[in-house]
Length: 318
Length: 304
Image (tube, rainbow over all chains, first blue to last red; front, side, top):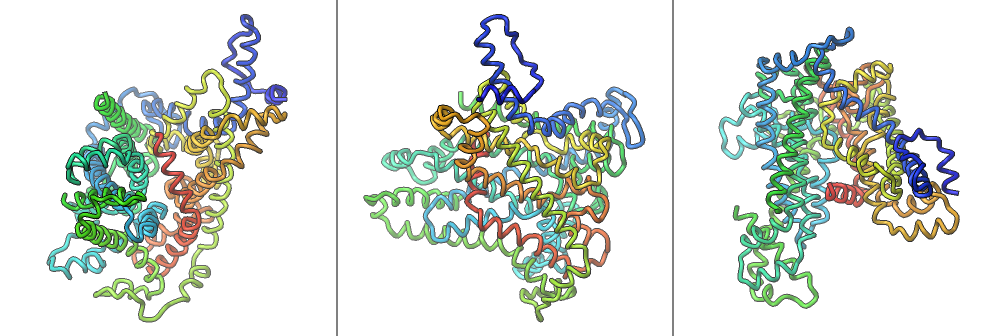
């Protein structure tokens, strides 16, 4: 039955190992290969066309001066040479790292704190877990528009509250150069913390309770137990969260693009990030080749950050 | 850092108190436990307020006059409740079109993602063949590649296929993600092989095993995947921003964003009404399927 079904799905097979030697075994392998591919193929076709091919093509497009009007000429590393001297590009790289540097630690501290709180049997935990997760499933557009108005310098509720508690000159938030990025970090941390909290909660539940018991018998205080039992116990989770958060931070895009409709101009380029630069050059100015070169840089940064974290993690667990 | 100290303390106290034979250590200092409990509860309430106030403000503002939204000092409740905004939203804006597009997209994408994702996951989880693990690694690796880095080559290909400015572009873009394959594979692997063996002896082929054994047993994972995909597609802004240029193809997110982008003195009453209408379906879906959201994220995240 099975083999007949698999054979009717005529998938061109590239992994055929040549059915000359050990004929029966290789026949089984062939049958399984066809069967496996028949399951995977529908998804793989879409996946290859929409993800794999573009990822590979990216590196070629980055070496051309491709634009919307026609085919690109191969110009080698010309785009990259131009990028290095482009002040907007440099600015966007610096801003991206600034954002990641603020967002990653802040989100880890808040999410872990929340997870520790929720790992208890306090009243109302279930309600709170729902509330914490809710921002994460709300659209970026809604979040950005609502927070943009909450942060409004003169009439916004946040500054009004700050004046109420005695701060005379509250920051201009998204309209000010120094506070625009911190405001964006606040919004994105508010949004993301529920998601990472769930990951931490799952991690906390894997720490064996006996270890806490033993630590208590040894007379440790809560802080020591946190450092010596909880943190080592959730290290795999911490690693995962850090990797996910770092990649997510480096590619920050939609929140910023909704919050600064002036594109790369507002306010004084204080919040221009790498993804936005790619979007601006590629889709607004139609310089596909140039934008792709910036995209290669983004790709390299994300890959580099992941590899470094993997190495650190490996070294620590060794 | 003293707060996290307290939190950890609370968590440990509670871990022990969960046991049937109550821990004597906890009994000996009930007052400390109570203090921690109170501090923890206060922290929880503060966090809950910080999380929910923006939503309350959004919903309440939808009933206010446009001028009233930014009154100083802030008045939380509207003077008069303008229920008519919810009628004007349908008559004065294209909300109905945007909602229709969004619902169509989210439904089609979810259907395709669940179908092809779980189908491929069976191949990865239950069929053994050379190259399978390498192929899966390729799937996994692309999860770490930011979409922003390859959106340009992708756009060029879509433009050559004449798919830009069609809803089909978003379907193609969203329906074949690696995430669904990954999530379903995790789940399929937890289903004992004996069940498939028994079915094989009964004469079922692999496709029937997928359809009649695996899928019914994977209802929780399927629910997770379906809900997450639906919500993601509903909320997606970047895909529609790049691909859907003409107004009649806009989704809710794109339409709402343009409430503010197009006119300087935006109609805030309509904006808040539109935002509320766009968020409420997701809130309802989330409240009903909460468990599946959390499980989907916890399992797919943990093995990453």
